Length: 302
Image (cartoon, rainbow, N blue to C red; front, side, top):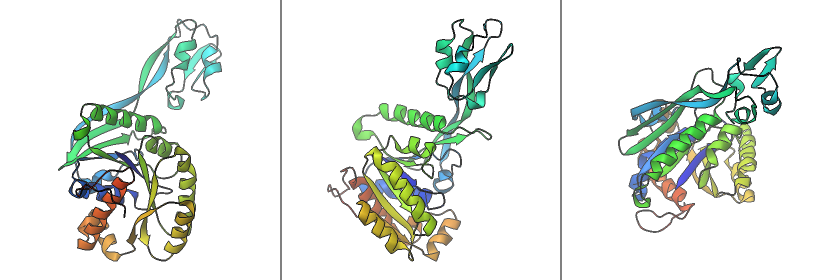
């Protein structure tokens, strides 16, 4: 099972929920778990899980390299590229690597064979573990503007890790998605089996939550909600969820104890027995979105 933890805006508590779910996942449902940080522009899942990183490798995007001695300046590559990443200025072929999306179309249309594939480093892919929790993350290179290709590279690595195991030993996956509803967020949740939206009951939070529901509903995946910092405004948020047919799996109250634990880098389950129970129940509810069972053998919804 792959569950994406997403949100309409930053700061709603998406990473807090992701890390807290991962910390009690195996205890709650008896299956291994892999936590994946896809918020590659600002990855911070590691701050809560504190994994030991076993490997870190570069993730590259294929970009064109033009041999000016072979290039005929016909402009076929320029006409094809929709992103303006390759052109001919006078007698000089130019490549703007930061604008290239790596589609390879220019290589295919060049009649002289003057274009060969090169590489631009997008960032790093890190792998490791935090005790029994597997860990995988992408980290965008400073100054790099294009995050979806790195997200897809992390997801390909996730596929490689899963392909090497049989179904019985394959871990459940928690994707800590980028915030918002732009291309990075869509790229992150597209491969998930279900989506858990973390929302806060504020005017801005409700506005962006509605945008997230609108953006992700066409994906036709099971979707549910966790309300964070619940209290004033929760009724309006819950009313919207009811009208949209979205189950609310849990509500995390606006509690000073949670804020203090979070400030120390702790998890929800560390706040107290009541919060540990909330996290265990939330695991069962998330697993139940796709019909998985808890330790009791029954699929449960909170």
